[in-house]
Image 1 (cartoon, rainbow over the protein chains, first blue to last red):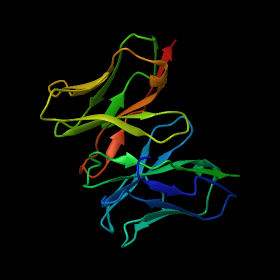
Image 2: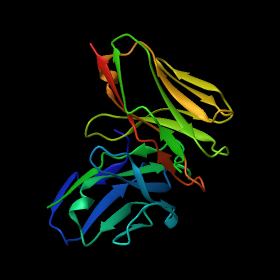
Image 3: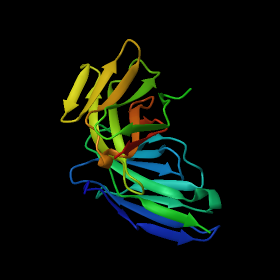
Length: 113
Length: 112
């Protein structure tokens, strides 16, 4: 157990819908990162937050947004879902920025039908 | 171009043999290089990392070496076991060093 908690583990939804993925970082970690992993693909960086502030953006679509709350948990919102959005979505957390000694949650598997 | 490249997509070894997976990076200012192991359907797990101020780090059967001049780093696994079978990802800092970019992964198969 990495200490990073993601919910839900699985999500099946229809095209055009909106979903929210949740991540609770390890106790003491201030930085949260979201990654997307499509089938047989690598890990694509989406967005990073540190202590409530957005700090870096990667290949995140405009249909996707995220935020980090005062209690440091983070949510990734995916809207107008398309079949191609089906993937594993991971969050990771670390004490400092830069993903030094970062640990991943177990991921949310999103299936868009 | 990509910040980090992992050229070997699959590697098959016999149980007990050693395995080496290499990655190259492009930013000479990069200072942190972790390796993650991902089993099928599971989360990536940090297995070892190295900072740019050292050339090698070991942890039991695994080690990582860093060649800053050539801008590559390698994961070494000795005495491989079937449970080492997984996809291994190298990573390096993205520009701005706030997050990591990951290599494309190497699937290691340890044949019993």
